[in-house]
Amino acid sequence: MKWINHLIDIIYPKCCEACQEPLLGGEKLICTHCLINLPRTNAHQHPSGVLERRFWGKIPVTHTLAYLKFTKKSKVQHLLHQLKYKGKPEIGLLLGEMYGRELKESGFNEKIDLIIGVPLNRQREKQRGYNQANCIAEGLSKGLEVPFNTTSVKRGINTETQTRKTRLERFKNMERAFEVNDEAAIKNKRIAIVDDVLTTGATLEALGKVLLEKGCAEVLVIALATAD
Ligand SMILES: [Zn+2]
Image 1 (cartoon, rainbow, N blue to C red):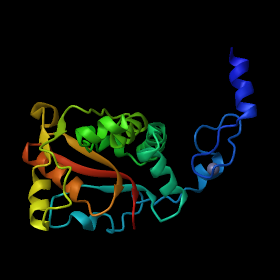
Image 2 (image 1 turned 90 degrees about the vertical axis):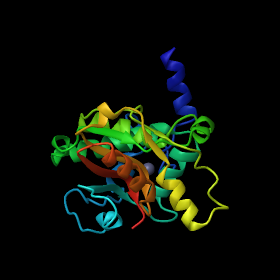
Image 3 (image 1 turned 60 degrees about the vertical axis):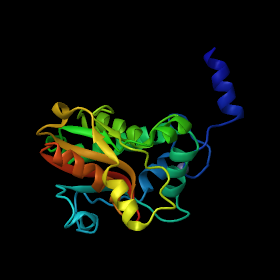
């Protein structure tokens, strides 16, 4: 019944998740034009210190990498919105794999032993049906050919209701946000922790701190996009 799918594609062509133009044969999710022109940071080739600065004086991070530049009302924002809120985990997988391949070309597969997505609050993951950070981590793993898992760390106490807390309470709350499930799995490993957007870095800092305390060798940060 392949011809039926073909017919459906002709009548209702699938559209690019970035620009909404119909996809051509062979294109998947994002059209070639958008893929080539997505605004990359190239931070893995030219580290500027802008990304790294977020973690200075907080935790030692070996490399801070972000694939794309995030700006309001851009294609990148649209893609991330589809990934997070519109039930499109495949966008995370695709972009993660593309970034993984680019990082591999720069030798990052030699610098990472394990890839871990930032665990999502259990309630939210249930609502969404997936954790977008794990989708990106899985894609990176495929592109870099470095293992990833979703079992080494978990979300700790409920960090959902932050709004009514004071800044200090929020900070204390974040400090206990993550727990290591399996110390043997992270011991002496160089671990890349992955999130969708790098903003203040507070969540990644909290996760990195726990991993370092439990004996991982190094922490790297990889985000799909960065706000600056
Ligand atoms: Zn497009």
